[in-house]
Image 1 (cartoon, rainbow, N blue to C red):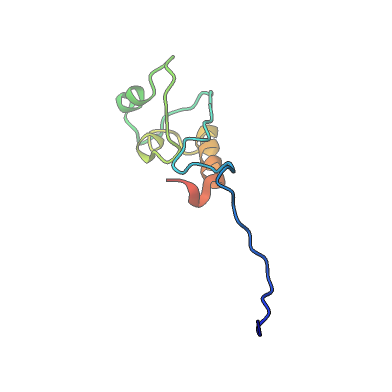
Image 2: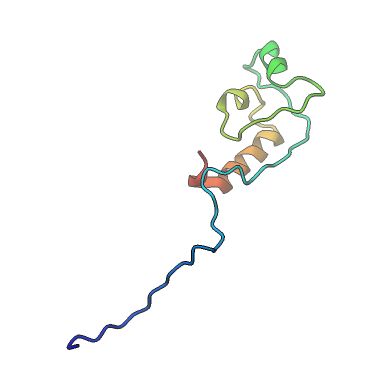
Length: 90
């Protein structure tokens, strides 16, 4: 052998845990009062967020978020979640 080989090789074993892609790994529960956006219709807001009923909402659902007051702490919390997700948000 005329040329020596230097370096390191990392081989992953097939039995190592790996994160599955497209998995729902982060679920956040937010329970707080918030008002409708001034431009939203009351009927649309009531249909999207019925009183006394838990509502599932993706943090990138612009249709439902448009119904919420943009100055509310709820929208601020959702924007904080989105900021942490960054490029991983689908």
